[in-house]
Image (cartoon, rainbow, N blue to C red):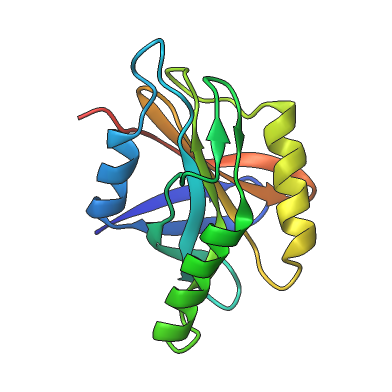
Length: 161
């Protein structure tokens, strides 16, 4: 496991712990071919009480019920929610939903208006916690977080091997 550290313009530091296994999942699902579709899922992990530190443990992956194109996806929540619920139960409430991830067919991903709208909906549905949003590009991954109503990239890292 390694720690990603970033200075946030208005909130001090955010630490995000990402296990190598999760990075490998993201690397394996990058949209490197011109015909590859977006990959996506829920992030499962935990966070400190003040939400300055996150531990990402795993993520869900696209399922048969989901749909995707090169530039969009439709996550059917039921399967992903069952996986999150299972981790929550087996961890005695320690692990839960902490955000979403998806891929972009760009070297360095930039969130689209659709992404931002979706993230705002995720936050509305989860007012009890802070969330992270990960976009995996062809070369770089970016972790976003809402800070004072604006989504900021709190960490950018080359994910290429």
